[in-house]
Image (tube, rainbow, N blue to C red; front, side, top):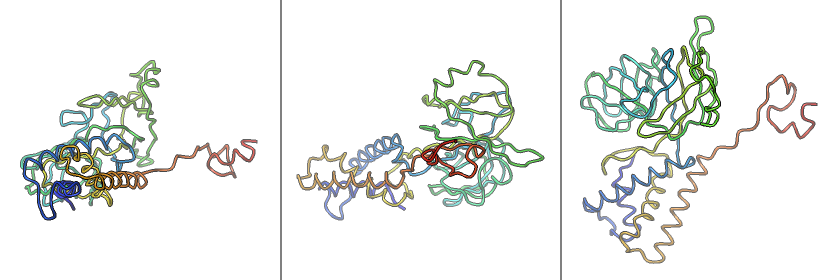
Length: 318
């Protein structure tokens, strides 16, 4: 657990703007908080600086193939009844939509920017398995009240699937292709009706993003896998939990950004801060880096061979 004030104080000590044991005055702390939030916004745009993937879940409405996402007025929202005690959210009923990790909660008495950070006994969606407990990152205390939640505007969608529930087979998941605008423009009949989507084009417009599905679905529950947005801190005393290595990386990268404003660092300090800032970013990227996906082929074509592209080196399909 950490607080922005700890990161800010450490950054200012690293450049000689504070002595050991000192804390910044309110004006300096608030100025540094603005810079810290700007830095997090910049990091969110860099894929390997983002430490997790959010699974955005939302229900499809028959005959609707365009949805907005990213705010309380968007189409991807959830209305439910729940209560908060400390950092635990208990959901007892869902009125509409689907609940999932990464959503921001609002309601009477709920602290601004309270975000669902992990599953407890509830596992998301809108069925019976979605009822139960979830963890949030800010401390709250409410009775049982009506709440709404919405997913943040995604920076990008990495992959997607649609979940179908049938009386015969039960739950079935089908992959949905994530396509770019050029491919979406090539679709002549964008309102073509179909049982569920086969492709999605995401338009990252502001302030709400737009999801374009094809074909026009009759049913289904969408699961979109998106890079998490590193949330802004609301105050210098917010309490958050970050992955290992992030605290130190944030401290020295913030120090690097603050150095020109204070001008107190000597050459040795400047070199040390810049080196530690670069090392911190590098270690985060190494941790978050994923190997490139190997090429895959239908099992009929490669019966008895390795299920990646390597076997092509030994004769291909012949």
